[in-house]
Image (tube, rainbow over all chains, first blue to last red; front, side, top):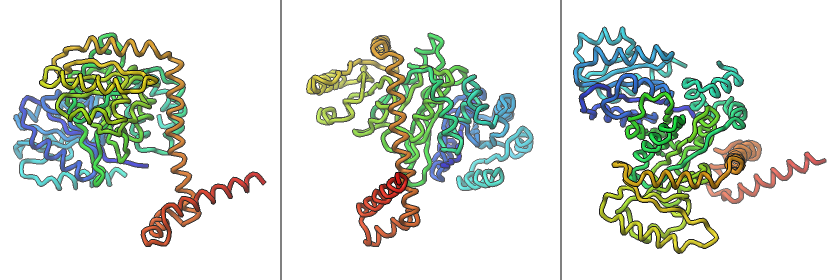
Length: 133
Length: 318
């Protein structure tokens, strides 16, 4: 068996600032994971479809435009609808503290705000994988 | 859906989730993957197109165009896009989807990204198996995009029915295109970025080096395109169709079977060697230590393994 942790990094919405997304993608790659990056301006449906086709363990969504309260839950909803709620979700970007509980309720296991060291995301993923096994 | 028969049925019915999970199974070499592939092998229906070429040649952009072309005739299209894995961490950044976004939510387009996972040759070890899964699930064509290749990554030509070698101006002088190997793998040589300076020069280099090919070898067609703005694509599609007409379904099937056997023989040989190492040396690590400490050369180890295998078969015959 040659199991690899697979993660999809998605960038929904209209903002084109994907430095954060690429930074995390590279950090996860350097931690030995296979990271699928979809590019900017993806619809939630496109992200969910890609996650299912790629059979990833995790989906990380990055957003800086402020539309997270709409777009984050939408990705979670579509994944549930397509019977893929076993995929673990996390999010990142400019997200006010007070919005985090709502996003967690919508199915996000973690929300990482600006300034988070990449190692924290790596640790989060490794911990979730351990829990799963 | 955990039984092997159940998995095979779901894949053949085209269940996206089942296909995705099966691809993971074969990629990870899970214990039931051989039985699954055994069940799927005879059910393959599709043809395969390989797309190879140096990094930045526009392979993903061309694949995106190919998807559009085959969707216009209502084919289901499977794509296997291989990107390199880091030899140090094993991680990989798989970014080929970015250029295929126009098909993001089309249910009849299935794109799967794969890390090469230490496999040399421009593909991953499981590319052939993944192609079998797609083909059995009804995807036709299955398009295989290799990692950006150099001069020796020619494996895709064995796997695909038709291989496109994508070249662009400005990547090297004529000596590069005269090197053996890479120029010989393309059934069609696609000169991309035809809107760029240097395209005429590239075409004359390529044609000149094809002139030097032995007359016994089939000369590839050379087609100029611009994948980004669509120029020359109709001629490329015609060239692909012409070649497809030349090979019968039967020939495709036979070739695929033999090539698969080759891959499996290699793998079986490796597994068998590992087993012999266990018996003769108490494992690979111990054999490596012997070599590293200078007590045995790698050749001596090979000789001992071969002798052990021969002894084994003699015993069987008695």
